[in-house]
Length: 125
Image (cartoon, rainbow, N blue to C red; front, side, top):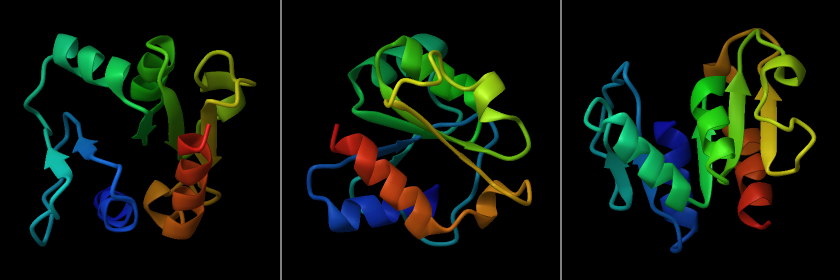
């Protein structure tokens, strides 16, 4: 997620990235301007408020993406083993509810270019 955020703010001046999560990830280098680390700092009401105003949510778990979808936010879920057709944001067929499935079950192995392309499609909606 850090690499995706970094690329987004480098290539798009109209984007700000907010990193959320309950299992913190420590980054090896400082995050660039425009990438904000809110891991373990926001409560549910703050997360809901942020998602309701966001243009896009990218998550490696279907729970945050389902919440984003329920709040009207386009979302991209990165799945390991769970079937996007069974666990995706409702309705799964809605173009704003996108998913990528890691073939080997390791989300971190999804190619950055593939994820970035999916993000660009959703931001263009």
